[in-house]
Image 1 (cartoon, rainbow, N blue to C red):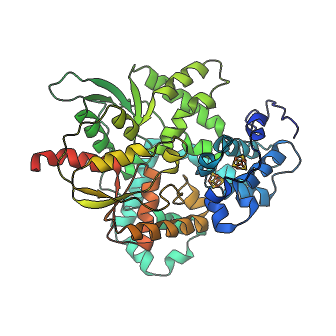
Image 2 (image 1 turned 90 degrees about the horizontal axis):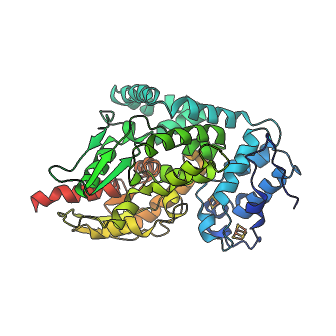
Image 3 (image 1 turned 135 degrees about the vertical axis):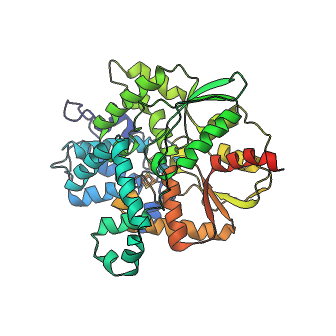
Length: 437
Ligand code: SF4
Ligand code: SF4
């Protein structure tokens, strides 16, 4: 393998040192959902690593076939957990995609350029997201969705639009208007933390944001939600648009560090793993490298933060049988598996049952359900079979992207009576139930 020369053009090329760590043992293969589904080396971590190496060294170009193998990777990072050599596959894949997007293997595919442009045009702009949510809400509430679904009209929609329509959860009546500072009443706060709102949460899950604030306040935190924060850049990183991701990261770093808080908290695991990696993303940035490392060290998933406190154990009863689906970016990227389970097991009245293959991807993967709908539905159907085996009435997770995907799975494959919840929403319910017990 020849060392990769880093030039201005390919500054985001995968690092030779990263790829060199792979000893081709294949331990990762049987944990890769796409290899398990398709059974070919090119759809495995080891195979994709070979392809990215060849691309980075200029031995192959970014043909449609090669791009398709990279595209089918759901970026779940289960291979990182399985790998005994510590191969940073997530980073290699992101850099491989960045190389393709920047024309490192020939003309970048149109679909990839469109995906990157859409992410930049939409996600960092709350006003545009609200406008889009308003249109979709009208579509769902006006009876138009019912009409479209009951006729053959839906089948006439272009492929991607049809899939988008299927994955779309029912939109809530309102869009979140976050409160900038929330303090525990009466007490001097024991902690001062900041909270990332996220792009999707305000329009799809406003209750989750409010539950997270209430839970943190119940644990003695003053919660600051700075209005100038922006999108974390996770989807940009996954798509290989590292330039746009760095721009967003710099803004977040400046906004959050200026607050002087003890932690920057998120209830979205995908956002958390990206922000924990800002240090790596900006390590060559002369102005932001050090600040990025400081910022990343402050980032905590809400379950991680609460368990470390430790969280207030004064809870009321929440009745139900609950199971838990690991978010890939929590379990594999952040190595957080015990904390969400510890919270669920601590809630009085909840009967926690382990989900078989809980850390196998549900097929969400950011926009994977839209770019690779066939594989996404396939992984989701398998997931729903495992959920049904648990006979749980509540399916919990800790990431908004997974919530969207799993809700779509419950609607299409069942079990239809199982309710979706974020771990923090259940904890909030337990705190609020104290008065009733
Ligand atoms: S990130 Fe997930 S889908 Fe991609 S190669 Fe690794 S295990 Fe397979
Ligand atoms: S990525 Fe890790 S587990 Fe997979 S083949 Fe390479 S060294 Fe082995």
